[in-house]
Image (cartoon, rainbow, N blue to C red; front, side):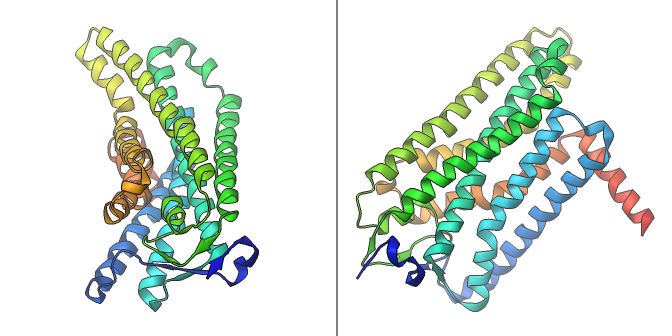
Length: 313
């Protein structure tokens, strides 16, 4: 039976999920409940700590707040559906629900990639151009760039979701994944997906590859500047200001590039799901942990916020 975009109201896909073995269902449910809770608590605490501490009202922490918002959005697109599938064993998702999930996830993904790139530029400006930092990273510029990043991510997501709606789906309705993503849906289509793949490749070059290149250039310039610093203390201080971001960028970009740069026709489906868990579920949990544990100012702000809250109670 052929399905197309004219009959989307009646179309339902079936998500395979992470495992069909009932023995693993409780483990999956409680593991992902814990991860989701940690992600929400960690990111919201980071947002509140930065928002209530005037000392942290700087460009770097403004961008970090945006990153935390993206993390909350990203993990909220995927994990609640996983939990719902385990609870009521209902693995179906409507065509409109699937398109919405793709739209929101691709939006969060593209926005996060651009944010991480601009955060690298912020560290470059702080370390390599300290005398001009306040001029380069003015409030108006930071707000404008942050708004632009969200809008560009939105436009990119709208293109992919729109192209997906033009496809016809036939024979199989089973998505071998735990959420609706572009490559698994392309595999189900009996339409010509060359335009979809071309736009995905263009987005991969524009977003991931270019952002990764800009980030790499920023850190090469930062490294060159750090090596010129004479004192060991100065080198450690300069490196500590960007080590957290470098760790997050390395972890995030490596999984994204591996997943989307590798031809989807040769991807092992189970391997693809495992890697998708890393950048869609694990990263939103790790980001607040990395930035809080490796940043003295954030730890102080979090401690003050928690103590103030306990005193109020």
